[in-house]
Image (spheres, rainbow, N blue to C red):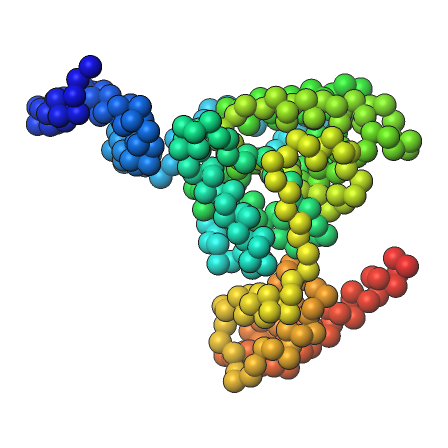
Amino acid sequence: MNSSGEILKKLFLTFNKGERDEFIQVAQEYIEREKRKNHHVLAKQLEEALNFESKPASHRNGCTRFKTDIPIPRDNESGFPLLSIRSFDHMWEELILPSETESILKQIVQEFKESDILKGYNLLPKSKVLLCGIPGTGKTFTAQVISSVLGLPLVQIQFDAIISSYLGETATNLRKVFDFIKSGIWVVLFDEVDIIGKNRDDHYEHGEIKRVVNNFLQMIDSFEGESLIFAATNHHHILDPAIWRRFDEVVLYKNPTPEDCLKLLDLFLKPIPKNDFKLESIASKMKDLAPSEIKMVAHEAMKRSILEGRSKLSKADIDLATKRFLDRKSIKTSTEG
């Protein structure tokens, strides 16, 4: 076995001679040597540097981590796509969540990034995460932010597109989706998983849905791809107990605290200047609103200011937008009751 000094000498010689393929081969030999010495952090850093340097410049942004020549799977009956693929450009700062929730999510991202190091100690990163909470609290946005942070596309699956009226076709669609996910490295979001993840003891569900639940459990259980999988639900109380056991982590989303309401309002109102007024009194009226609802109020206030030709947002703009939204919400609540 060559010593570290001999490998480094060979590395310099191949570099000076311009022998690119041999240079990469020798560099990989050195990286493997560091791995055997349990220098996993250094090995990973060298590996990332080598991968960056060995790619053409046009491919150095991470886009080669997934295949683009595989067609998006479609439902045989309708021809509609079973999933969508999008890239986002968000930052952690845009995700306003309780510090404990943010800490959990950041650890998931760190484990995913450092998975090789963990595997060197026979430890596995969390790769299947269940996001629970009422609509509008940030579950989908979380997946978008994490896909941005990791530099990976987001594959989003809507279960209403997967469910087919033909017997057995839903299971076929699920298989197509999982086969596609295995084709690359993605951040994956199964949205509204409660549609097919309902408790199999529910007497109102017919046999086909129960078979679909079984198929989903088997597929997610046996999935061995390198992607980071999220599943989101607005109704976690109706999920089959076996669903919970398939996930490494569960994150519960709630309406924001008064402090977080203030942060969200400030974030959403950034695009245009404000008159000299404080947001605290306005944020206190939004304590029962979800982040998506606070965003709607902020956008409504900004539109009013812009369309009236004013250069700055006034407190009256936000007060009126808040009142109108709360009025609409009370009407909706009364009709549901």
